[in-house]
Image (cartoon, rainbow, N blue to C red; front, side, top):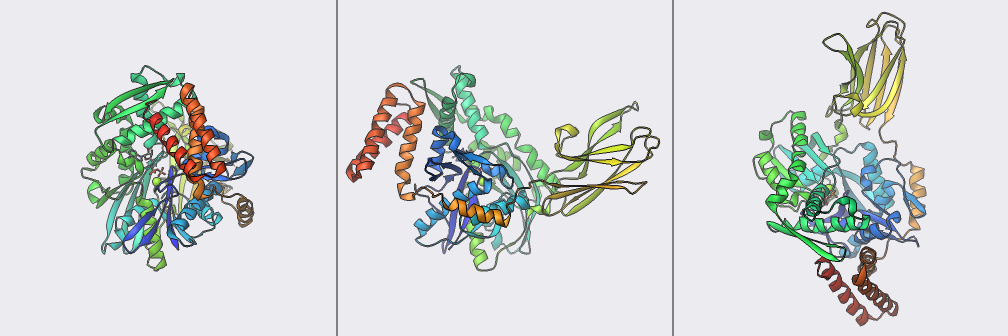
Length: 564
Ligand code: ADP
Ligand code: MG
């Protein structure tokens, strides 16, 4: 069996193909989304998803989240006594999805098509593939998330050509991709986005409104109270998908504080965040040399696009209703499953991956004369501009600034800011030139960016032909064959928590978290319920277990409703 996997920063999910079309595979809780959180217990047992999310609070040092941001790097995460690379943590998520899929489908899952953001470079894609392999799956194909979304909307069934704009707002990332489909080839024409903008910002906005109205500030809250506030805001935010007002309830120091907020008020509060969504859209269109009218379909992707404020904003921005009838937080996994089925039948869309364009501008820092003949230093000089089709090689000529200058320093920078220092520093190169009057000696700076995301910088003194070279691997992080083998071996010792026990373990961990968060009578109540629960589990008495589980769930609900 081959499945499609959306390995998200916030949530991950799997889908498979049926004669009726693609279907999401529910996890052990019967839920479609598995939070992308991993936690390791003292005994080496690995928890994934909701259980790990609870442990983020009670066992923070043993829990990791948002590691997708560091995919393809050597960043190490210490979880208790062990350390993991991002692909290893991701492999636990995939292993969990695989186990849940096998239980649901009643057959072995051997292969997967996994999605990655369109802007992922070769290294990040390789790391994603490795994650799949570490989970015991064959991964022949990586599909771009925006492409998967377009496939779920039936792009591959179109006989003609089409252009898509995919608007993907996840938990903490915003991606705009412009896709051009024709002749069975999918081209990613441009990408833009904001790596630090997502649904969480809207949760924060709601939490801020709440604090303000109750004359509280973030500073007076303990870390736990802050987490609890986030949770309350998250729940209240999702209510907006259903109605025009939401009531946020937050138990603070033994008191259930609440606040009812209308959609209009919320929209005003979010104006600043919403505005940030505009620039990447404009930029992607202009980089692709397209106008909005040229786009056939705008598709909304990502859980955060369920927010009415975002839908309204997008409709206004695009002057039309974007497609969103396929659940935005499931659409990528569904598309990946269709892709998997197409692959099996050998009719997959040929996909030009985005490593076909360079996602950022690469340049250097120069000095330029001002009107009064004074030189202003630190001005950015782009050499390879963003969304240039790669492999690309570009040269820029610069001149000496001072009489008898013998050294020219070339900064290698990445970014879009006019001020050189605001861009990301990647490295530097020093080249010697013969002494001469200012401006007489020239240097040719050549940037070559290849399909693997590796940048080669070459600086040549024009008069002497003397050349210096620098190779910059943006993410020198891919694991070697040997490292993968070793990792497979050591990961094997770690077992994913058995899915049959997930529900009880979740209740225990949640109880543990609430115990730590609360004070006073509520705390005693939880404590006594947990003691009974543990005793019932110990005795393995089904009736007793069922009774305590019901009691626990009811009590959690009471707490969440702020009724305690
Ligand atoms: P990622 O692609 O980063 O894994 P998702 O597409 O799963 O993320 O989106 C997660 C975000 O979507 C979270 O910020 C969550 O609060 C938000 N979200 C999910 N459902 C809703 C909803 N009904 N209303 C508003 N926001 C939602
Ligand atoms: Mg996503």
